[in-house]
Image 1 (tube, one colour):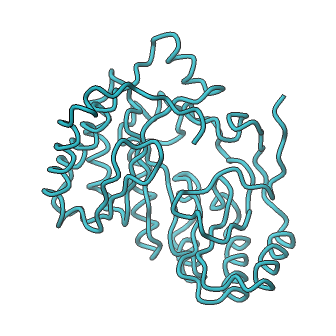
Image 2 (cartoon, one colour; image 1 turned 180 degrees about the vertical axis):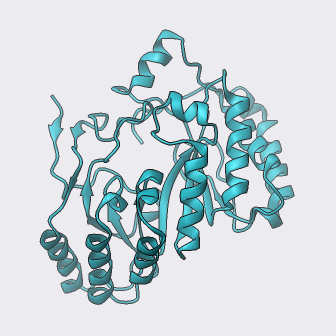
Length: 302
């Protein structure tokens, strides 16, 4: 039986926050129903139920880092979605981080679209004014059909609204896209829907991830039974290329392939300026015989 972890233990954080000060705020995920995700349900050998930490304990952690001179480092408020907490609670934590730790280049956390939509524009502005710089949000797919199948708990229009509201409040937005989430059956819908949502929001950043199906997730059984077909490396890269091709001319986001799951590492600080070069590089990778002949890997630990 998987071990249960208390909310002060961190299960995951974004790769970009690898060198950041990590401060647990929530444990687990307040939704925790996505069919492709087993992060808090035993995939990594542990179970972590959703919980909000006592603010006194969070402040003790902040004091710990301050006493040891962890100034000048980015700070990541950990947990599946700290924005699920009451606004006044999160604002108090952000302000305390800013008070105790100096010269912070970035203060960030995960966010879920539904949590953002539950907050008023004024509440989001309070978070921005307190010092929340950026949130990482899972778009996963811009297809409402795929989101429904995967039990994401939201749809494309809700994500568009949440993303726009975050950015209007003055908080940067980093969206995650999962290549291959529609499988072979819904690949076209995945591409078209995702390009549309990205064009509507024009997020600060969007990041590609490649679907890997983990044990103990509902999608694992679909894959093993043949109901869900994984894309090959080349097919995943083609999806990325098609998404970039279909973006509107307004999109000037930063774009990254910064995860172990990806089959390429291309990035740009402005996809509007670098789109032609980005697409050319992707095409060269797609036509590489080594990539064409690469067997499909399925990572079970990332």
